[in-house]
Length: 109
Length: 117
Image: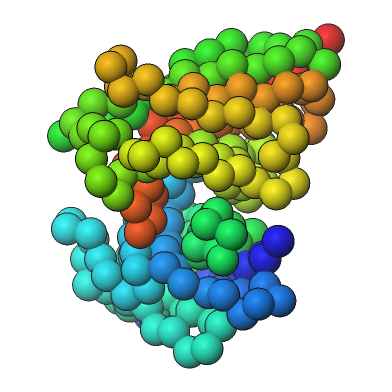
């Protein structure tokens, strides 16, 4: 089964930009329909980005994603205190299942 | 408005079978392309996808847990049920159900299941 690799933690100051990477490691190279989630402590995850680069309504355009090969990167610009949370990427697999990354803790300094 | 709510026991004993119910509203699992997944999160750890049932009753399971999981749907009740056999303390986690399409766009609040004797 494939796995997704994320950095354990990133940090940034208010107003800055940060990037969280998500690298697919499946042997078949399948890395599609990547989505990103934000999770505040004690809360359910919230969908931020789907189908690689699309944002649901209500998600600010400070959140953007780029993808190159088997790596997708979430960029948060104009960092705000409320962005402090855990972030997870997810990918659909060639087996019609889903896989999550290990999560990244974002600290706003 | 799409809502999902998980229900089930908060405590199960090792070797027992866990049954969780996801009751949803605001969408129909008979709509083409729709699906509902179960996802869990051990305390302080990452999300783990478990299983999914599609609008056409296709079912998919985590490779590592497929022998222990069964997912089913009852479209008349707008419910999806997950059973997990042979529970172990390492299965202690918050279990979420979520509507899925290109991603998981709506989530329940989660239910914490503790496995302990």
